[in-house]
Image 1 (cartoon, each protein chain N blue to C red):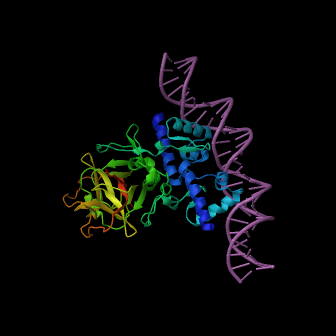
Image 2 (tube, each protein chain N blue to C red):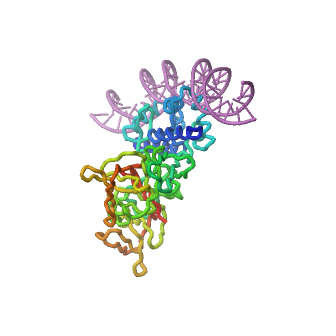
Image 3 (cartoon, each protein chain N blue to C red):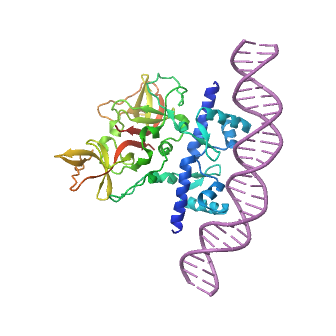
Length: 195
Length: 195
DNA sequence: TTGCAAAGAGAACGTACGTTCACTAGAGTG
DNA sequence: CACTCTAGTGAACGTACGTTCTCTTTGCAA
């Protein structure tokens, strides 16, 4: 394990700690976490990670993770059987889920999906819909519309020059709003968690 | 402003700080952040927030935010028509998704889904599977297995005491490996982007 | 009006914090 | 081999840390 791989291994453990505690560990905890016997080793490691752009200093002088800290490996292609794959492969592509899904953070929100009216579109109850706030949408977009003071997730369709809301489940009817259709936002992504 | 609204206001400022620094502030910083002149006020506030379930203690004894702390990024309530949703409600908290999906960052990677063999499970071609690297899995888990030197995403099933791979599409056959089944990882999440 | 509960003030205490220094061991290069 | 660079050791220091205690103020209920 060369020096780069070693620092990556250290970084991985810090990332795991962050996932558990939602905060970077103190020097003393980093010592036991990484197997160091001195704090200065920690200090130098952090400086190295700073040069590599994984952490930085906040306005208050504390260490904070950068965006790069949250990027992860994106495996592109099939891998020969038996070949050991480090989840964090040095040199392979990294990827930040949030940046992938969210283009306008200030204008995007997550809404949990209820019901199974969109099940044929692969949208299940409990999934999180990534919604970009907008008042208009295009034919075929999946949108959050406001019907009877409730959010409704449906595909936007056209029928005789009027907008309608199409479920992706034959058990549900097409919604044909009498008044103007009020669109809350457009679905730009989906997040699902298993277990 | 009653006591609940006050604490909610306090919580909001702590959430803003967290969004900036990706870490809960210290007592001293909470003092200036909230306008307190004593640390004990901070201590009592944190105890109150703990009772309300917004923060808790980590194994190391530190204060850490709970899942509920991040709930403001989710909008589950029906929103009255015409009511503007401020960008502030969404927050600049762009790592919520990461933390939601990924528990072991150093051991987790993303693999693009190919084909439609899992379509009935709502997993489409082009989706990103969030995979936790592991060599074993439980019956019913969706796993990445290595078959013929290729990644295969299937549900892990049992058949007469042997593990088999179940597609979620009647057009595909059940895979019954002759040798030992080699599991690459377990699917813990799914990410999809529209457009 | 009195009594009580709770929010916050203020001070004191022991400790864990991050920084810095000089030093050691090992790897790579000439 | 000697030279150098670097990761890690180990100790020391000043300070900011979280906790805990008593006291004051405020609001509400009896």
